Length: 172
Image (cartoon, helix red, strand yellow):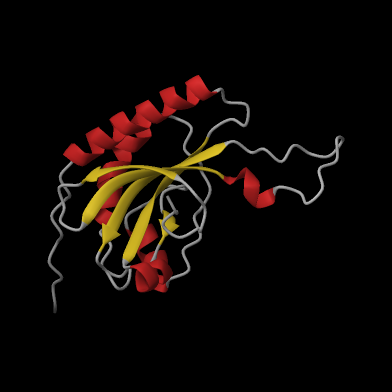
């Protein structure tokens, strides 16, 4: 199916989350085609990069990402982190100011916060944030199936995690 916002084709695994309007999900994409050279040279660099797996929360029925529950994503991170040690550890680009402000507020580690936010929510009524894994370019199909089975098991664990209660804003 089409990705949440990158216009790439992905395989998606998803299940309902215990929070209304959310699903826990994974999208698996081979991004190699994006950078495939117009003309392949035998001595040139190998354009195959290996599948990329995004895991996180997708929120449906929204017209912006202002209401995304970043605290819920932060509560899921310990489950995600303990499931594997190969999460990408680069800072996500968050174009919307409210998403950039939420990211440090939750104490997000590098790598948590990848996805599609405000721009996609205004176009498609969906936003999603999570973390990514880059699988090896030479992964064998059987090993890819094993990896995706592990990701599906992680989603089951994540779907059992109730979101934290949002704290009411206090006014002085």
